[in-house]
Image (spheres, rainbow, N blue to C red):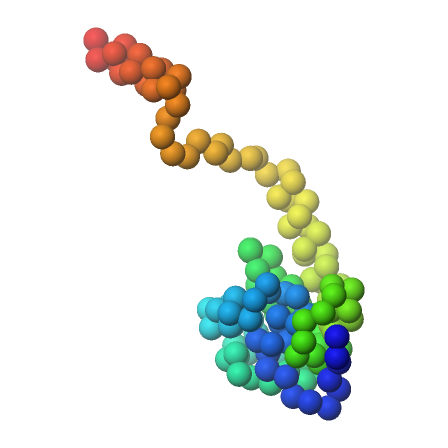
Length: 132
């Protein structure tokens, strides 16, 4: 993975190269949706990133705050991608709290779709009892 120190890199490319999003299209969609802020200001996908900039990235209810350490426009292995940024202590703490909260949260029942034969019989039986 080639690291660019003197080149300008678009924010959507950098987010993709740093492995925050699986594709550039997803990164662009998140930026357009207001899920990415640079120094507290909403940005467009074509905005260039500089070293030292603070990015707030919201993904699945959890917000990450990172500081850009290096620039790259190519996606490489995850260990190399993690050297492109440094996550703030507050962000790490919030993310760990969110993960702990999700572990203790009650699980949702996945009864989606058509009822099974057994469920259908129980529904009919329940309706017949209440119809009387």
